[in-house]
Length: 228
Ligand code: ADP
Image 1 (spheres, rainbow, N blue to C red):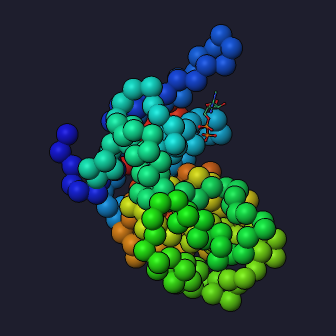
Image 2: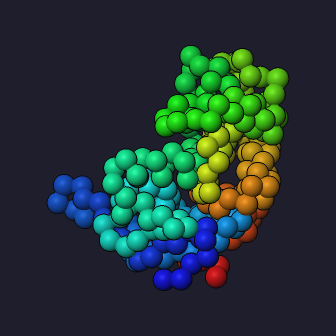
């Protein structure tokens, strides 16, 4: 398998879940390649396996078979420590629920992923710069409860970027937001992805949101239809 340095490659991913005696093949031989600087949206009905695929790509959920590679690293070939480091350093996650710690300030929330592993001392400056980028430089000491839904997602986006990931995964990042806010958050993700040349994969129900990203894919019956 030949890949450029920072490609994300998933090859023949299979994932089956069992519930009681019933087995569900959520992903059947799903293959996907995204190059550095590419963005893609994954659509599909609820329960079709979009989150499962995102989790497999991000090192959160080992597939039953198949391989994932990001640049020169294959997360599921790493030991536990290596896999944890891969998730922390190489991948940024944004979820539908922001998962911010309510007792921590905006700035502290953005710094949480830097608490694992050795830092270089520049983390607070980097966090402030990211918060300025997402339009929250006047909210550094606010608690999440004092922010709007859109502002909380902006904090989650800044947090996802603090360790300089090469892959950004967003699972229904606009699912809890009103339409206008959802579009602004989607635009922000796209702009940041273009600035940083990360690979971005966004799961969304909305065709309008999906249309903002470079490629549109749909998942159905365990198969991924890619636009190319
Ligand atoms: P989507 O993100 O498209 O809504 P999911 O990836 O969350 O879909 O789930 C796909 C299917 O796999 C669903 O039927 C779900 O119930 C099932 N599933 C997801 N995670 C598990 C799990 N840990 N154990 C058993 N079944 C699961």
